[in-house]
Length: 134
Image (cartoon, rainbow, N blue to C red; front, side):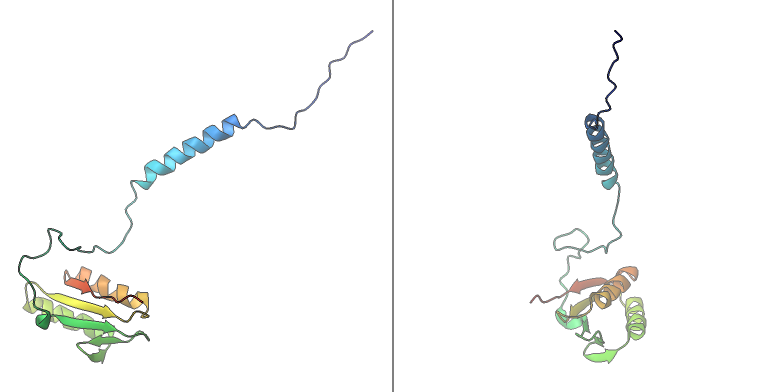
């Protein structure tokens, strides 16, 4: 009488090692995410120490508007982005502290607004985004 051992293959997978791997990956991504700095616009929020203590009159500020179709208006006159850039560079050279108001239409293309904000940041010009919401 010969006894044979049954060799059965189990179809189950061990989940304990899988949960360990997932936990380690979760910890890794949580630690890495604190090191990532998004390349966003540096906005000056109200009350931040960078703001000047002297109030700025609205009459002295230049206004850059962006229409719904994406056209630029500098103090009410239709113009291009290059002309605005040249005008801002000249104004920045004349004044030590220069500020502008950016007032886009609620349905204006976001890319156009970001282009003006980026330009003002590169030139170290204070900008106020006067956006309306629907």
